Image 1 (cartoon, helix red, strand yellow):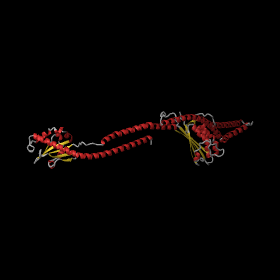
Image 2 (cartoon, one colour):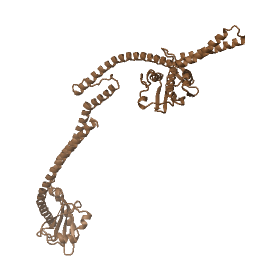
Image 3 (cartoon, rainbow, N blue to C red):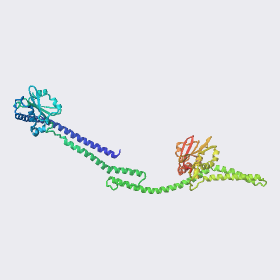
Image 4 (cartoon, rainbow, N blue to C red):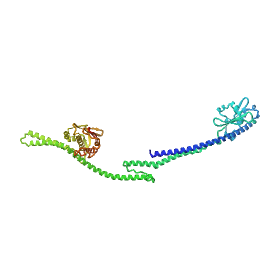
Length: 521
């Protein structure tokens, strides 16, 4: 996991734990304070409700008495007064709008007149009328059982938690009047001690998040980005690129020290690479010369190994020439016979000339001549040079080439490649009852695939892995120099190709050559 991710996770965890601890502590303290305050408020509220209820009761009795007196109806003559006029007078009282206790704490109110046969409600004004649903629950039966029989002021909490107060008006005012009012839930002690702390938390949490973002970008800019740049520089150095110094060398902190050390190292490596490149170029030039010398040596060694075959190819025609010369020295030789011996001598000389040309075709040259070579030509040259060895070992050579295969390269070096492969295959099949060597070639895209296989003794894995090493040989005595297949590998790669080998003990070997193909125009 990267440092950037680790730092982000650590910041998030620390801030989350801090906020959680602070919030838990604050909420616990505020909850306890609210519980204590609620207990105190409930205790105070009970006395407050009683005081306010008495205040409302006295005020409404006074107002009701005043209205009854002003209406001209006696206070105890409840059945004779005009209820409509009284209700209208009650609704016009400024008391409902001007008294601060009424406007603040009185929610709903109505008066009740009880008679022997009926119960009538009198609302002081529309704004104080109960809702239809709540008013429907206050039936005449309920009012007679509760309001009419109330012993002084009675209070009860409704379903919404509001305080309801009801009772009868002082009999000195009117014996048949009662009241029913509901107080607002607002209390002078409705104070939440955790509200201010919660507001602080609402500000602190976003502030901590902003601080986290600031720290993240600050840490990213000063630490993570330089580390990433240093990592990329190290990868470039591993790839051999020493030309892009780190841009943090001017800083005075640890990052600057690391950047300066990296830049110094790149400068030294660049100088060392330049110096070593000169040494490598010189060593490469010496190696190329040594390799060319090895190529020449191997070609000469190969020519030595096939010298017997060449001598056999030349000795037979030379014997014919000598015999023809002796016969031609006879003065009594008739013209027909003389002409015949001349033709034999000419034919023998041509055979010797052809053999010499084939030897010269595989002779070493200091400068290769790159040209378009028909694949048949170097294979035929090599086949003719090992023809005597094939006959001597009774080994069959089968050549199957696709028509028109042309290769870009040096004809002599290509002949040397196939000559060494055929000599190696002849050595592998020399002790076989029915030795067989096959050369097959076909086009493979932009390459020509040449397969040289034999049914010889094959190679174990440890030999197969080193078969292209110079001076490595399994042949005893002076039978091998260890250069043949190594030179083949170098010549093939020098032509821009590649060579692979597959071999199993007692089942033969398969060499596959991939050479650059020259397409027909």
